[in-house]
Length: 112
Length: 111
Image (cartoon, rainbow over all chains, first blue to last red; front, side):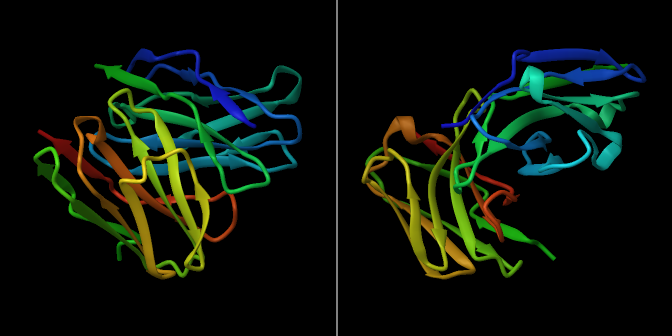
């Protein structure tokens, strides 16, 4: 079965600084990888996804993520964060069934 | 134009009561899900229906019973509520096995 680890529980970043969130997955075949964002009191919104092809994927809100098979990683980055990026971020991995597995999430706090 | 909607948004109830949460999607998707997000924000799949047929039934107490009257609706009924049922419940839908469109969540508090 697939699984996801997000090593960072909480990250604090200054507004305008860069952000990188780590995600490591475990799956025997080529995974389907996702990043979701959950703003306070809201549902989850898909930021970006990787299925195949170019390992650097662009998403919404200026986010990008890079798939590195050798490291089993799919880290999320943003060059310059805005206060509105404060949220919970979830990495997820899907296989050939309907069971999308989520990581435990990383809370991002943005300070002025 | 809400894609996935849930009602109610908040639900506060006493232990032992029975309650239902409703979910509707207007995306024309074939598959719908219920997820539970606990106090540590961990998301766990509970159930999934594809064209009204149950396809995922994780280890969930049988006090929880999903019902899908049609492929646009997936309701969750919970009998004999317990303190540990307090969580945020998210409904989601998808057209293929990987995409998920999530609803806004229902925060259930059991007193």
